[in-house]
Image 1 (cartoon, rainbow, N blue to C red):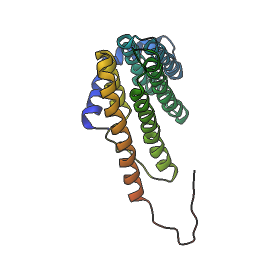
Image 2 (image 1 turned 30 degrees about the vertical axis):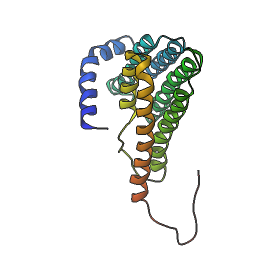
Image 3 (image 1 turned 90 degrees about the vertical axis):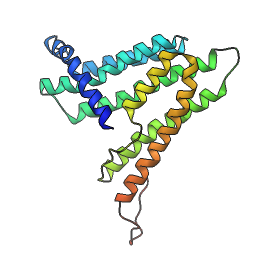
Image 4 (image 1 turned 120 degrees about the vertical axis):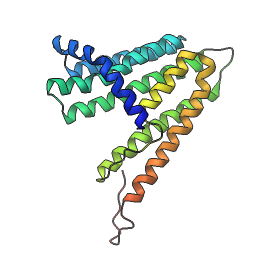
Length: 209
């Protein structure tokens, strides 16, 4: 994550602090916030699939904002846990999947003629998004860290939301950018982690997922 992105998230969290305090006073748990955020992002996929790109983008922004609330709420309530972090990451990926599924439905059913290119690009974005996360998780599984990445989730959310708000004309070019950038980030992470791992095993032992 770039320094600009971290700075942006810090400023946004400062503005959201009153919301976090209100949620705490209402007795809402961080898990409840995460589930609500997932439900809202799932709804954004339905809105986009129905042909309402702008409003789908608005709903997706709202759902994604909850990703910045649950962690701070957990810290405020003293309930930070590995389980919460695990579920939060899973919900993030599911939220993206719901939105991309909505876009798939939109391009498959809307327009004067079927448009295959956006569908191919969406598959590439999904592949890039999943493998970007997988490489980091696999690195941690073999005892390494992997925090590098040209295009991580925050950047993907911002760019995809911007395209939805601008309209159909902006979505396909943005999918091209996201497809190339996410797959490039996967390769970047693979090279980064592989360079830190030991070479061939003299005993001939290897592993596979």
